Length: 264
Image 1 (cartoon, helix red, strand yellow):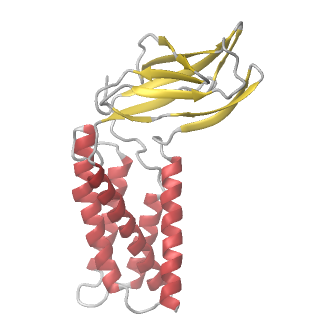
Image 2 (cartoon, one colour):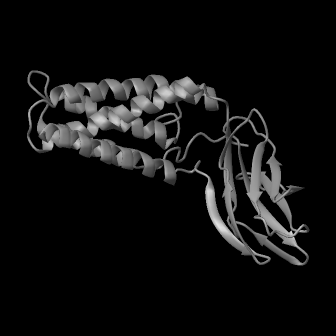
């Protein structure tokens, strides 16, 4: 019974950290609402797009939006002094639809969405532009396998740490499974996804600043150390608990932070 409760607790911790990482990442859509021309408009602006086509931006205005309410996209390449481009969004019923031109893999644009009616004008995100990064298409099965294996690695990591924390026997196999899953997910499937999406296998330390790759390396090294602490016996409890805490900490870092970025 105690083992089952630990598994449930490990799953809750792992799932919560995965959701937090996803929602706080720089590729998660920017959401908000703005009051304009007597309307309360909810919006969701993309921050990631595949470069097989232009990035579609849609604003739902609501049923009572006046026919003369217009929208404009203002954009330029991120981290440049290039002049801003302005494109009119197309009105389709109660929606405004615009397209940001596709960019090479890892290329970024910064953009605003402006609403205009008569002499009134507003930016949905105020003075802060939205940053969108383009990527190459990744096979869905590969992406699903990567997500599943990394989730299992985090789950086994948390379970091993909790089991060692209460000094319960049986965490040796958990440590081994964590290390194996971390290696498969982070150093086989992960680099393949990076290659499809951004044209490189690895962009973390020491080759780049991608925190997703770097944090995977840190977690892997932590579990190698935990395994090494028990070469002739079971791994030391302190090393296992430490590796579990390190893994949880590094995977709380938002996904894709300081990720691959094309230098214009």
